[in-house]
Length: 410
Ligand code: UTP
Image (cartoon, rainbow, N blue to C red; front, top):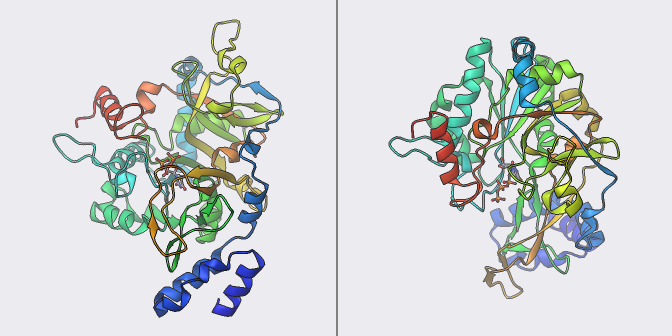
């Protein structure tokens, strides 16, 4: 895109201020800015113009959804595992690590997976995850292709680190990287912010764009060629999670469901966790802040909470379903965040309070795009140790304690 084309595009959407300092920029900076303008998706600005602060909360009819419980799973473990291992051996399973997030709450300046949890020896988050996956590979005697989603901001560091660490023993032929899309931030007036005179303030567009980014990176051919029918999506921050878990895979396949979700029974009714339920008859995740008091406290005759099962960002989706969904627009969430920017005098402002809006796609919305989802209970003490914060709830401390409880030497 050249300057004239960029100007015309920005005029049409009322954003010409982005070129205010164009003449002061070096040739390279000018090219980079033009490329960012070229990549701008004007439909996000339309989303923002419709955003009224609470528009996201309108939901369909919500009803509880049970789960295959720990007890039921332990009775069927052999059958489920055999089916899962068979699917892995047939090459039908791939794993997708969502590692494009900014990890702002942890406050670590490198990709979250590079965080060292060790006390007496290094133990990185990536290492914990890859070790868990390797166990499955060893048991199945077959590799599970691992796709790693990074963002523009952490791609180089992630690749260099994993290369340097020799992928913690995982065969690099089965590791594939792809970069997720970025989205701009806008001020309350709907004007896109600049973080430098020649750079639009952008951030990764949420964890829900992973499949379209995977396709954009050219991996659909590989999925189809290799016959990878199911993808297990998981977050970088749960160091205990079981990836490509044969029992979960087998249970989902044998159930005939379109998708599967690992869930944990809520620790208490007020736990801040999204709950898997039904919305207008199809699977859906309702966030803790969207639940009414009635939903939070409602119980079944056996005493169990009706909305009992929280999601831990570990899902199984079918490649064919995802491919069919590619043309469907996903819901864009508008979130209020602190975004550093330069004002009209070119001065860098670092806000203390949320000052801007970002656009995010969320993987949980993909669950609602499935007709059915097997809700599969796991034991939180063995499979749920998320690292969101440096201290306190869901932190490095809590994850270390859980790793030790699971026999991991730190
Ligand atoms: P979180 O919702 O915890 O976001 O991500 P985050 O960006 O990592 O952390 P905070 O909110 O800034 O502290 C859940 C999972 O989704 C991935 C993360 O890497 C993590 O595995 N994610 C999130 C992406 O891959 N891309 C995104 O744009 C956002």
